Image (cartoon, rainbow, N blue to C red; front, top):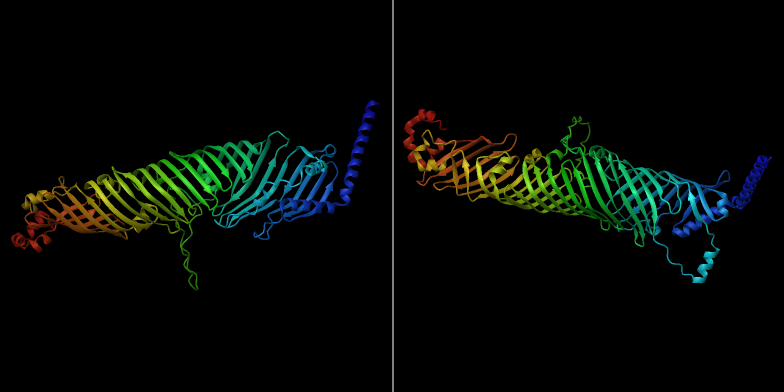
Length: 631
């Protein structure tokens, strides 16, 4: 009997609550369009933008629910007719009984098809700035304000089961920089919401920026509401193989949103990340970019993002420094320090040449012209770069330091200084990143150990000493073969003292009879000189030695010749050795670099200024030539 009584009482109670809910909701059902208009007008006044709402519908069982089919928030003036925000569908369900006590208990909030159209014009103004400004202080007197607050309904959010946003999209365009970012397939899920308790946040979507393909990402955090701010701890984000973990503190101020925090990136494989970002870069060495990790502290404020300090390690290279992004005008300030870098493994992989298409009949197609550089190389940047040790194209450079400036695909390193094989290098380097890539190098080197430098370049190992030189070169490409094919310019070299192996000029000057003797050219011996001066031009893989002067204690040497860089590095130079007696000995230097041969040109020796010596040698005839091996 008691059980039946409880059942009847429970049924009557539920019926009463349902009837009360229907009676309470009946005026709203009757005047639903009026409610919709009032909501739209209230939102319009709060935002300062026209708000339109589509159809509203109500549900009473098992929860009191409001469904909205379509809504739009107009754009700011001068930003076009496309709405700032659109919603395809939204559902809000609340429990009825807590409403009678002024409490809101949400069962679910589901938003589908949210579209945000964010814009920033050339002057740096955005179409959402007016929406996030703090409200102005009410001008009403104190008594009126109290009366208004007393009359207003006091509803407080008690708890919510969660919030779900599905299939949202966000588009951002910057008229000043040309940036265009699209966030699509964006889903948001918030866990249970209760005042004073942390809220679980989960985000997922696909981001596409200008010049790069779309890449998916996932983000999760534990949000804690604080005074005028929000703490996300822990904060996790993942993109392909990259996963970052840290803490984020966000604060809303009068000037806008501010945030700071730190992130740690455990060791991951960068190659899948590069593919996920849609980048075409592929290092030439399959062992390069196997692992990477990092740490970064960041600060975000209106108009500025600072990554300082940060540490990135890839393979055996450590990069530290800071990067600051200024929004108005757009500018990146970067200060980077690199421990050690071997460049060759990280140069881009040479693409395989596709088969040439057959020409189509009809008029010729216009020339494609110069391709624009990638957006990354087009960013405006200013800063400094230092490298402890850099190995590039066989050269080992230490203590490299450069001032960095970049804008619209033009990158300049000036001043550029480094230690170079015991000496110093100072100059400037300019790069035009548009395709085809081109560069220009102007430099001055002093007191460089030329033997070590030339051995690294696989050129003229016969020389040793201290080198001073000036050069002005230009060309295209960043790998060795395109550089050798395209390099052109001038080179001037001076050596206050040094040595030349393979030719003993002083021996010839001391004993002129050695010209025709069996020891006319000593293979092991060399020549110590007191001064060397050379001038050369470079064009089309050909180095033309326009002037060469070399002085020893007994002779003077002058010469001209060529050095062919491609397809084989060979030298062909004629030296004229002037002895103290006035005798001029012509010496031909010929052969591949590293294995050159020195030989006396007898025909030239017996002509010109050496006519007396020529008549004395004519009687020897061809047999003497053949015996001595003289050309």
